[in-house]
Length: 107
View 1 (cartoon, rainbow, N blue to C red):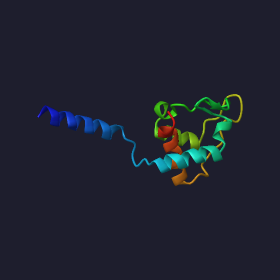
View 2 (view 1 turned 135 degrees about the vertical axis):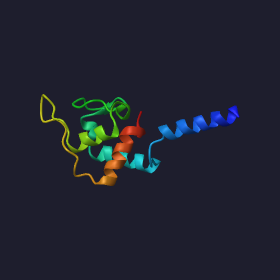
View 3 (view 1 turned 90 degrees about the vertical axis):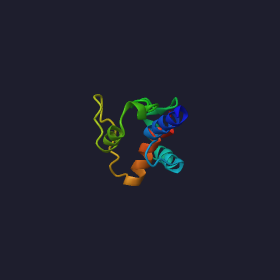
View 4 (view 1 turned 60 degrees about the horizontal axis):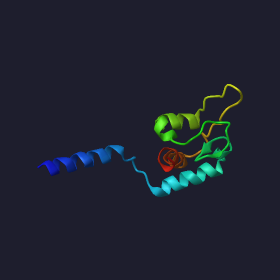
């Protein structure tokens, strides 16, 4: 009985922490998009990149998915300059892949 309860608790915890509909292909596609959009020109990730914007290491733990998406679509303007450009032109599937990459692809 105790073993069955333990298994149910572990299964529930795994379900709660698993990202919805996440695939390795989507994360890889998001990583490719990160490169093509030249995000690294302004942001560091794993110690590589520019310093104009904030580092993106662990950004998926600091911001919710909704906050990340809002920043991509309607970024806050920096105090010292024009800030981050809008990426509203990215289609919904590419945006999902980029968000998956930022949330789950790089820790």
